[in-house]
Length: 269
Ligand code: FPP
Image (cartoon, rainbow, N blue to C red):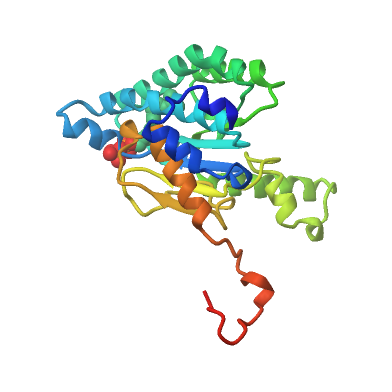
């Protein structure tokens, strides 16, 4: 976390929030549903794409801040399989912003030892987008710091279908028996293979939905929703989310204290 304080102003509100974070209990993996770009633009009577454009800077700072905090993995939901239903111009602009971001940020990712990864059906994207993504993947493949996953042309159900297909192929080819399929083997065929499941799922703009995001992986994630629209998302919101996460009691369907009954006179909590 030391690297984080180099980019904060001593004593200001963000510094104070960051100081309250317990570095021993950081979420290993944070996933973010970046929502509200359109509403941000509408509030200013601007076209929707102005909202997406304003959403790039929070992407940049969130990636860098998470890396400086010492988060192991960050997954950002940038484009869903359902987003193809949007107007053509909006899709083209989103892809252009992504290419521009990668081009500009690659040096910064390398400087911060960030490994870039893509989750989603990358092969269905435009060739020029695939080329830019491949450049980022290759350049950062030996980085050992945070993994930054970008979810592109991503759908949780599609991802599970693809994983099942891949397992079925192996069963058909005799490389795997149906009995060998368990949660671990299925997880190893997902885009997030090798990474811990998200401990914390953040959603901006107040909607209480998971929107087909990381459906398998968020089984036990703590969810934090903020009314803040994505273009207004700042470091302090990230710190607030982590602080709230650190207050939660995670039971994974079990009980705390191994189910020990409180002694008489002891509060049940
Ligand atoms: C949701 O807002 C946001 C998206 C569909 C795309 C997210 C894209 C960015 C943050 C910009 C560029 C990304 C990168 C990785 C550089 P919405 O349009 O659904 O908002 P609304 O619900 O208010 O209409």
